[in-house]
Amino acid sequence: MTAQHPGNPIFDLRNLAFRETPSHNDPEKVRTIVEATGFFSDEELEISVELVRERLLLGIDSGYYFLFAEDNKGKLVGYTCYGPVTGTQSSFDLYWIVVDNDYQGYGIGKLLDGKTAGLVREMGGTRLYAETSSKKQYDPTRAFYRKTGYHEAAFLEDFYAPGDGKVIFVKRIA
Ligand SMILES: CC(C)(COP(=O)(O)OP(=O)(O)OC[C@H]1O[C@@H](n2cnc3c(N)ncnc32)[C@H](O)[C@@H]1OP(=O)(O)O)[C@@H](O)C(=O)NCCC(=O)NCCS
Image (cartoon, protein in one colour):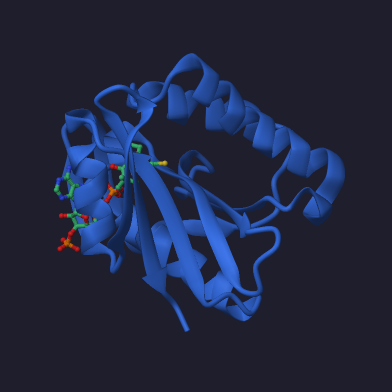
C-alpha cells in the first residue's frame, strides 16, 4: 500500500523493515516518537524508555520483547513492546504500541500488532492483553484495538484517577 502524507514523502508499507533486537540508540529513538504523540505523561514516557534500556541490559531475561518498524532510511516509525504475564501459562501483555505521528493512519499499527501477535503465538501465547484509559483522549486508541481484533474484557472505574478508568482489551491469538 502506498500512502502520501503532507509532511512525508510517498510512503510504501512494503518498504518497512522489521527488527526484534534493540540497539543502543533505540531508547532515544523510542523517546522521540513516544513523546511526539503527546499521549503520554512524563512518567509514562520514562517508563517506555526504561523498558528498552532494561532489555538492552538483561536481554530476554528482562521479560520485555520488542518489534521495531523502520522506513528505508532506518528511521523508527513505530514499535511494540510486549511480554509474557508472569504467573500465567500463555497470556501476554502488549505494553506499548506506538506509531510516529507522521505515519499514523497508514496501516503500520495494524501491521505491527499482527506481527507481534504472530511472534507471541510462536512463543506459545494464546491471549494478548492491552490496557488503556477510558478518557476521551484515548477514543482513537480504543477504536484501533477494536479494529485490530481486540474486545473489551473489563472496565475498572476510576482506576487511574477519579473519572479516568482502565479499559482492558484482549485478543485471542490461538
Ligand atoms: C494507536 C496507534 C498505534 C494506531 O496506529 P496506526 O498506524 O495509526 O493505525 P492503523 O493505520 O494501522 O489503523 C488500523 C485500524 O485502526 C483504525 N484506527 C486507527 N486510528 C484510528 C482513529 N484515530 N480513529 C478511528 N479508527 C482508527 C483504522 O481505521 C484502521 O482500521 P481499518 O483496518 O478498518 O482500516 C497510533 O495511532 C498511535 O501510536 N497512537 C498514539 C499512541 C497510542 O495510543 N498507543 C496505544 C497505547 S500504548
